[in-house]
View 1 (cartoon, helix red, strand yellow):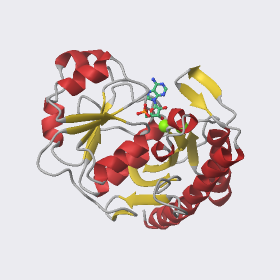
View 2 (spheres, helix red, strand yellow):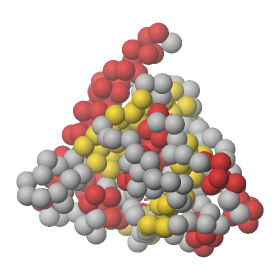
View 3 (cartoon, helix red, strand yellow):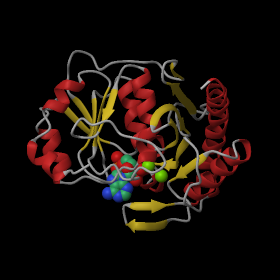
Length: 280
Ligand code: AMP
Ligand code: MG
Ligand code: MG
C-alpha cells in the first residue's frame, strides 16, 4: 500500500488542522451564548449547535480533500464506500459541554484502514481554560500506529494503584458492579471518552472502564490509536478487539476497557455476570 501510505499521511495532516478548526467552533458557540440544545434519544443524549456545526465543518473539509473517503460521523448521514474510514465525533462530552464542564469536551477523528484503527486525532478545545488569566486555549493530541503519539507528556499513575475513570452521566449497575470487582483505590466520574483517555496517558488514571452499551465507534476509534501508540490497550469488556470497517455496528454493545498498563489485571477482574449481560 505505497500510495495508501502517502494518502494516510496527507489525511493525518489534514485531520490535525481540521480538528483545530473544530476546536475554535466549539469555543465560538459557547461564546455566542446559544447552545441550541436538542435531545436525541434521551435527556442524557444531547446535541448542540456545536455538535452540528463541527460535524458539517469536519465532513465538508474531509470530503473536499478526499472525495473517495468513507466518513462516519455521530450526527450524520449514511456513508459511501472505500477501505479508508474516518470515524468522527464532532463533539464528545456534549452533556458536560451543556453543563459548563468544558475541559471534558473533545473533538475526535479516528482513521481506520481495512477495519483497523491506525491513526487518531483528539482536539481538546478548552485545555488550559482554568489556567490563570489569558491562557492559550486548546490543544491537539495525535497518533499513528507504529509512529507514536504526540502533543502531550506521557505519564503513568505512580505505583500500581488502581485509579479508575468512568462515565458521570451514563452509569448503571453493570458499570458499578464491574468497577467494584476491580478493587479500586479511587474512582472518578468524568465526562467524555476522549477526556478519559487523555487522563490515562497523562497519569491521572490507570483504567477507563465502561461495562455498558452506549459508547459508539466514533468515541473509541481515535482514543484507541493514541493508547496503542504508547503501549496501552482498549478492547470490549470480554477482551475482544474492536473493529472499525464501515459495515461494523456503530454501538460498542459489549462495553469497553482501556488501560495504559496492567490490562491483564483489569480484564481478569470483570465479573462473569457483567460479561453475560454484555453481548458483543
Ligand atoms: P461518557 O463517559 O458518559 O461521557 O460517555 C462517553 C461517550 O459515550 C459520549 O459520547 C456519550 O454520549 C456516549 N454514551 C455513553 N453512554 C451513552 C448512552 N447511554 N446514551 C447515549 N450516549 C452514550
Ligand atoms: Mg462521544
Ligand atoms: Mg458527540
